[in-house]
Each structure stands twice: as structure tokens, then as C-alpha cells.
Length: 349
Image (cartoon, rainbow, N blue to C red):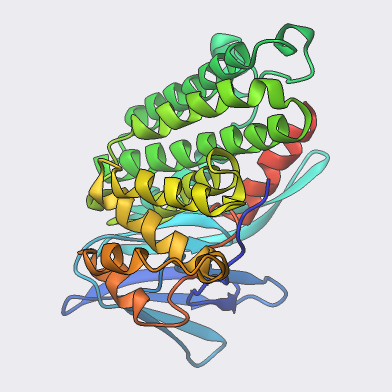
């Protein structure tokens, strides 16, 4: 799958492990005790540049201190795994190398107030990808199966069934463990992003090897994305949902409007975006078009986008439009470990 590549702007630190969080005068402090040889990367992922509301400083005795200035919960990433920080937390988090029979893996061990918010992703991660097999007998479909050779719709439906089963399991587990609604909503967003990644991956496969089935599959993808009522509140905690919009933009530009190969296709795509009913999504699509296809706009001497950009009300996008480096989208909007895992699974098909 091809995506426009953007640098990811993050607060990025090579760290090692023992995390202690506490609150002082509306400032949450996370102290990381570095252990020799354990490399950690802690970052805040974003699609479009935002003001940073935390800082990291190196202290004494090989310690690092993260100071979070926000008054609402926030998602940060520890080695690509989300941790949910709540102002007032008092948590000690150890990142250890666990040796299982025949396998070694990094494991988060947390204690303290709200400790479960720091390890929820791990609990789900270690049960995938075979977790739905014992529960519902639903596995990811193989595109190479003969029953899909003449039916992209059947493949799409089975792929959706697989992801729906994955989310039903995840949600039931999170509810059973008593996680709060923010974490459940965040996990649902992440599941949506993973599913959209799979749909785009296979759409690209159809584009390369089975163009006769591409249109049917792409129409289904369009309907699926449009059915999601994406709103500004969806990005309050984590910005993965912006990655989903970026992937949908890739679908529009690469597939639906055929890489804007002609001026007519450009006009058709601009008209489509202008009429997109969800304003929140529409403004992102306009921004990505300006950023990703600046050369195309210039080649066709297209000036009609300026009026639409001036109508944008999203303060994050407005600020990014005034910065040359405002756009920081990663290739797919997904954490690298998840993206790689999905690619490996999909290669089997």
C-alpha cells in the first residue's frame, strides 16, 4: 500500500524503565528509572503539529522526568504501546524482558493508583491474533481462496466479520476488567484504524492484480468510512483517528480519483471533498490535498482550493496551514509494530 510519507513530529526520548507518576499542583510528574541496556522510546504521536504540553528532562542517578502540564487525561506511547495518563496518578511502571518457554518479550508491570490504565494494551496485544479462534471460530480470510476470485464483496464481508469479532472480544474483555469509558472508546478507535488499514491494504491488492473487482471493493470501503461519525472529540485523547482520515484520503486520491492523473479528476475530487457532509473530516481532506498534491495543483494552475482553505475552522489545521512543517503524518498513521504485524498477516493471503 502506498501512502504519502510525512515526518512524524514527536517528543521522542531513548529511555529505559521504571515509571513513577504523581501529581503536584495540577502538574503530573512521571519519573523513569533507566536500567542499563534497556532502550525505551516514549513519544506523543501526532498527524498535524500541536503544542506540546509535557516535557522530559534528565535528572540525577540516571533518571528521567516527564512533566505533564495538562488537566485532562492523555495518551503517550511507550515503545509504541499506549499508556493512559490521568492527572493525579500514582503509578510505578516496570518495563521488563520476560523469558517465556521458547520466547522472549517485553512486558509492562504496573502498580499503584490507576495502574491498569498503563497496561491495558498489553493485555489485548498478547491475546492476538488467535484470540477469536476459540471464541467464535472466525479467522482472517485469505484472498487467495478460490471463493473470492470472482467476488470482492464476499471477501469484504468476511474481512469485516473478522474485525467485528476481534472488537467484540476486546470490548468484552475491557468491560470485564472494569476499564473506564475513555479507554474503551480509545480501543474502539484503534480497532477502527486497524480495520481501515486492512481494507486499504487489500484495496491496493485489487488495484494491482484484480482491477475487475476493485470498483466493488472500493465502494464498500467508501460506505464503511462514511458510516463512522467521526467528531473532534475522537481526537481528544489520541490522534490515531487522524491517521484513519489520512488513510481514507489515500483511498480517494490513489484509487477513487486515480492519482489525479488529469485536471478533470482533480476538479472531481475537489468537488467531492467540498460536498463531504462531515465538516471535521472535510477539513482534514482539504489539508491533505494541499500538502500531498501541491505539485499537482501547481501543474494544473488550480487556484480554487484557496477559498475552501480559508473556510477551515479547525484551529489545529489553521495553525498547520501557517507552518511549512505543519504536516507530520506517518506513512499509514499506525504504530510501526501494528503496521508491521498487519503486513505480515496480510502477506499470508
